[in-house]
Amino acid sequence: MTINDYCGTSQLINCNNVNKPYGFHPGGIIISSADGSVAFYNQDIDPNVFVAHVTMAGGEISP
Image (cartoon, rainbow, N blue to C red; front, side):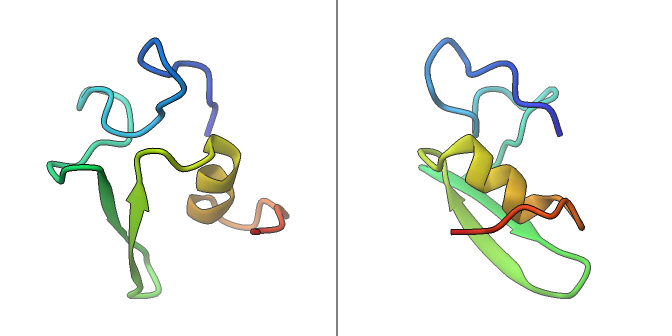
């Protein structure tokens, strides 16, 4: 995942529902993973932390 557009601010989530992470939940999104887990991600999350959480086998260390 490439992070290169922040809706004109530092926000990555809920910018638009065309090609960005978007959920119809105030303040963030809910993402389900292939392992059956479900997580809520606040729209103010650090973009690098978000990518580390939602990409597979990227080798990132999640804080």
